[in-house]
Amino acid sequence: MLALSLVDSGLVLARRCGDARAIAAEAPGIALLEEDATLTGEQAARRMRLKPLLAHSNYWRTLGVEPLARPSRLVRTTADIAYAQAQALLRPFKSEGEEGEQVLLAVPAGYTREQLSLLLGIINETGVPAAGLVDAGLAACSLEPAPARVLHLELELQHATLTVLEHSGAAQGGGLKRNRYEIALRHGVLALQQTWMQFIAEQFVRKTRFDPLHEAAAEQRMFDQLPQWLRELQDADRITPSMQFGERALEIEIERAQFVAAVDKHYGELVRLVQAARIAGMPIELRLSDRAAVLPGLLERLRALRDCTIQVLQPGAAALGALQYEAAIRRPSDALALVHQLPTPRAAATRDSMQVASTPAPLRPTHVLFQGRAWRLSEQPLVVGWAVEPGRRSLPLPNAAPGVSRSHCTLVRRDGAVILEDHSTYGSYINDERVFGRTVLTVGDRLRLGAPGVTLEMIQLVNDDGAPQD
Image (cartoon, rainbow, N blue to C red; front, top):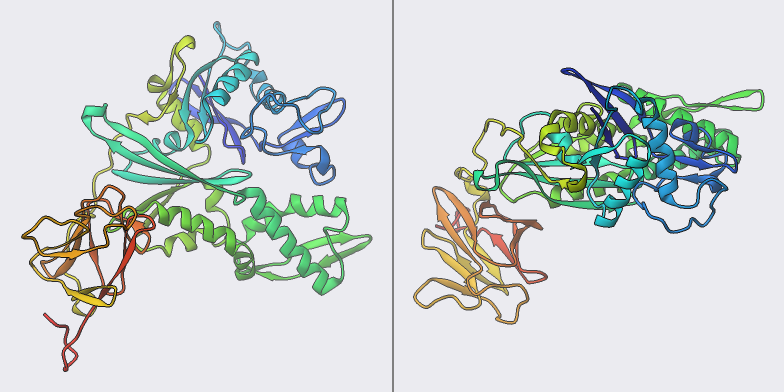
């Protein structure tokens, strides 16, 4: 059995022989459409900067049958390009075995139903029929037991994808299930590489007057050398990139911190993706693809997130995970459907993320501020909403506030901490992190109710001696 991961920053073909699973081939989703030949993978990547008008790098994501703006004699659509690469990867396995090989497809989130149908037709046309489809992020995170809620961050060529996976109860069959996903356009591998290349070229111009981006051959050489420079920066504080200019070898020195700073806007968006998926009051369990983990400074940036645990996945995790769960993914040829849930065992809990701990006095709010008035927080619950039932201590809100429920949430002081309990339809947000259930509040937290809704602030009033008011 074969498994093909269609994450285009590095398509991975894995194969199972007996009990052993191993990577059989890997290639970037890049193609070059010459008139008499269609190059894919590394062959195309080594020429894409020389012939940019003939290069394609988004055909797996934009899979379709619409005519290309610049077709070749052999290729007319993105489906044709995808077929050419799939055929090149699967050809060696077309006639092996008495019944021939079959392939499981690990598909990134975001494909439409029509694209999945077209994808199956493309793969079947190679002579290695598709036996099943599974979400790539789910398959990658299923190689090992997973916590109750885990995030998966993957970098594709054109964008980044953040997938939220959660364990479902026995009533839903149990196992790990894709809950939702978010895609950040223009923050993928190629955008990072282009930003770094422009930065390196600026350093060469500043120090040597030589511009590697001025001539296609030099640009291609820099593109080819960039992965090695990035690998060196995993263990070094600085590198000395060199470029050949005529008979002269030009060399500059660049510090690792400069490389990291150059892609700050991209890293900032990746951090935003992860942070936006956090449930307030709970830790982040993040699984990161090996492609993302090798980028200088990204791991450090993600680890700076509060209460974030990161696990770097092994190369080819999505394809290997698909092989591991073949029995749950495989379907009859007339009933193929994308699998969103696998029977991944649940990892043993190492901590109770919802346990309430006492908040240090300097950080414990005493009041909530709304429209210039401070409302005291105490052991008696304070219900926030626009139509709280009579007899309950309440903080009334304007009934015209969009997204605000009648009894939206409750604020209560308990066991030395101030706790928010959400009861709303449209959500409560602490510092733009959505609350599911309850969370502990600290001084300075901004509580937003609804979207755009209203905003309240957690404050602390003190006595004359500086002690917090009870």
